[in-house]
Length: 56
Image 1 (cartoon, helix red, strand yellow):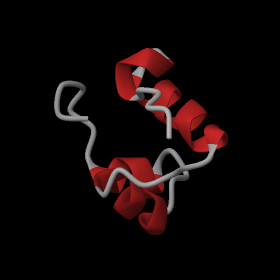
Image 2 (tube, one colour):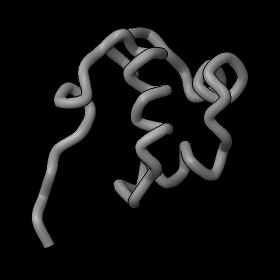
Image 3 (tube, one colour):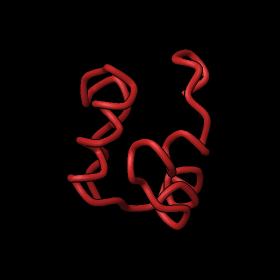
């Protein structure tokens, strides 16, 4: 978000990502795949730029 200059306000208001989801993102908690899609669109990036798979 810092690299792209996107604030949490913009994620909430312009991209339709609610404040609970923003909190989960900051805490590295689980989020839905549709949220990942919204993030990639908002940040003009690929999934691998914002997510990493870590097996249980």
